[in-house]
Image: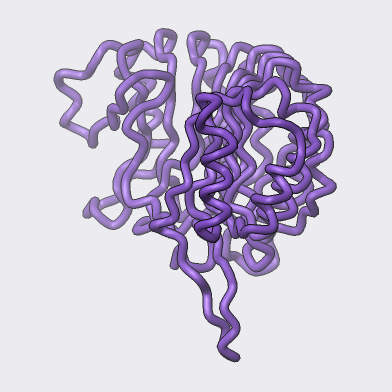
Length: 332
């Protein structure tokens, strides 16, 4: 299993710099030379500063008109509060943040809050407010507050500049999958969806991926990741005949419960020899199937990742053993 035991090291090709605590702001980098991380380590500050307070200091001490990349770390208690206040703070500075091109919302380590419990909200106002944004990343769970909807939302929209969209989740809601699929994203080159498990909010079906797999609204897509799914075999079977695959450079079906059935279905579909890379790491494939994949693709120059070192079988109370996903129940 994968755990998020460290923060992002870079974003938009820029090294991460965490905006420091009060009184330690000497020697700040140039505004356009770093991916600025707003948010301190949870549990480590004696008197924790609220995210919006740190952001207020940040916009007062840094020329935010030159900032190109922002990383949103921990806010308040992410298990019980969504980042609405964070989003409102960013929207209030949309005119000054005119150079912003990349944003990651929820750079939160497991030790701070497990991914399955990270509360989220509708993140599309960020795309509406920043029409020149090129990269958006979101880490989302379903929160833990009873009676409140603290899950990610992504209603369909059009955005002409977005080149990369990443949604990391232990369980991606169907409405999010459908919203992404129904969005008009003519510049999108990189799409990375962590689909997750039913027990953690993944109520989508493979049929919900059809608008993405058709590629009709994604004319420039070159890197597609549909991973971390308990339905990975079904996803692989759907991808085998998907029109979008013919123009991909990278196909990533890793981190899920992929078995021989899914891999054989994938190989039995359209040719994959045009790919630069096929990523199937964290898998439950037999040696004969692994050999067949390599024999089929590697002579054509396809880089194949079949590493399964972190794949962990799950045993139920009755002794039944089944494949597990990388980020989900065993992330606890």
